[in-house]
Image: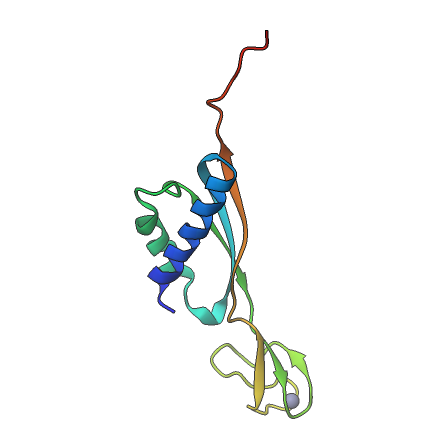
Length: 123
Ligand SMILES: [Zn+2]
């Protein structure tokens, strides 16, 4: 997936959420992102420009990086691979591994700024 597509879909989701909650603006968007996606920096960059003119403008994008873990098809070991560029089993060095984490892109939560324009007199 292209980072701009991801940035836009995050903004769409956040805008929908803001509308449902009658929020004035978006404060924070929290995302979990696997390191294998390679999206960490491009997404930050795209988000800022894609958010311009939307309710997400000025919102902070918080990205939690998710490390890579693999499950070995050979010995069953689950753990961090030898390194990020050589996804081999840490136990038997087989390269028949399944990626368990490291590829995800998950919207965790959205923090909105509530609409404070509806103050009503108490009397
Ligand atoms: Zn193994």
